[in-house]
Length: 282
Ligand code: SF4
Image (cartoon, rainbow, N blue to C red; front, side):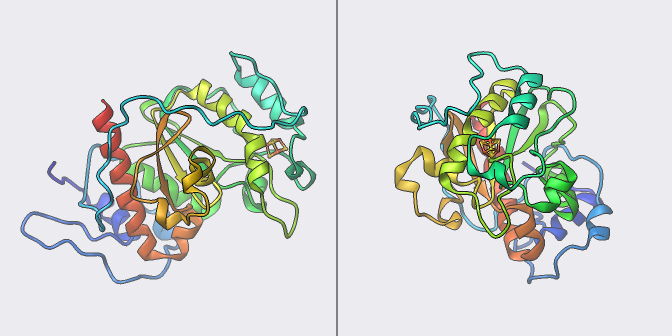
């Protein structure tokens, strides 16, 4: 596929630390640059249709997922967790999450972080990020501030938007909906309890590709494949995993990308792998 990048797309890739490859030129990763400022990230705009740059490293070739993997095995779910039955509805999910006390994270929250506006439309992409911290809780958004701006521009670079639906839609949510109490972190057990909500979101949004961004979000792979346990995020990148029978790619949380330009280049490779995987499934 030939590259047809306009100035804004090039600027976006530059912000991610990726030097654009053009025929007859060598592709290289730029030297680490200072983290993107809010202004510079905000300056990026327009959605992009298909574009691809050679990955900065050679991830394992995307293997089309031939058949759905077994769902995450039955876990000891708290009796306080909601039971949505077979047909969750958006208002019911919002209400149940707000009242949920199924794991210890409820003790630290001011309120849950779940999109509370109209029910999301079908979106091909499900982006799962780490549990909210204070800034995300304040913003009532799974990703907030400069990290949200960067994520939106990363999505734009591959033709996606949080406000779009269908093939261009990306629904962003947190792997656990509550902030951990001060000086603590979410545990695997907490994430297991919150799976019931993620499953309801998957039933409502019906995604075709899952992007797991962050060291907590990546644990969805580890819950499903015991061999993946104790593996750091770096080891899980570059391969196609499965979450709830959907192809899943592991990458960095946007907050990490704000602090590390080299990781932005790797994140670009992750997005390219996800695109290739989805195209192979079409
Ligand atoms: S993190 Fe999830 S499971 Fe735990 S209390 Fe919040 S909504 Fe319930």
